[in-house]
Length: 180
Image (cartoon, rainbow, N blue to C red; front, side, top):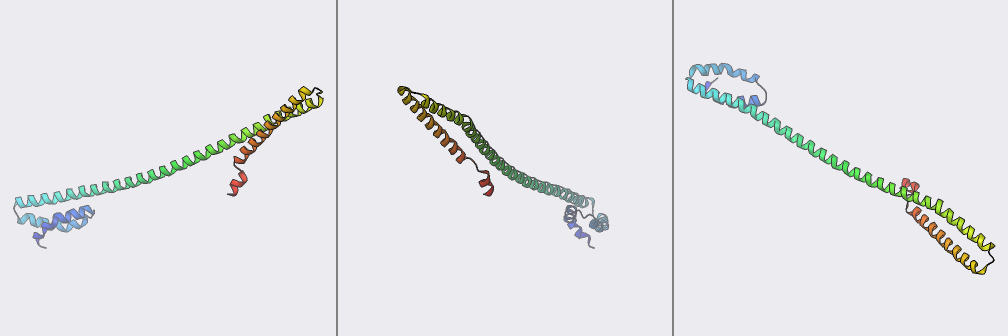
């Protein structure tokens, strides 16, 4: 109603441009024409400069706010991805440790089986052969050597048997692990 209140137009333009509500500025168009007819060109030029400056600053402020919001979202996304990567890395390390443990247990079981199957059978056969030679032998000098050899082979057999059982005791029991 009063053209003097057009002084507040730059602030209103700033606010309306910032909120994208341009339709409310239509009210000020008749007042602006009245203002232009009443005043000289210098105040009108200064006034219009302020109006355009306020519109320009409003667009720039809005753009800065949009970029700031986008920066915050990118930073949050980056943090989330970093945390997810750390979680996945720790899971990979745990899986790697588990795989190494399983491979170690498999190798231990394979070695125990080979010792039991190969060396144990050969020692058993050697013990039987020495016992047969001791039974057949009539020479007293060789009899003591055969007895010592049989004792050594029996000790070796017991040692291998204990080692295989120790390897088996240290291995993973599938039933116990599943129950745990």
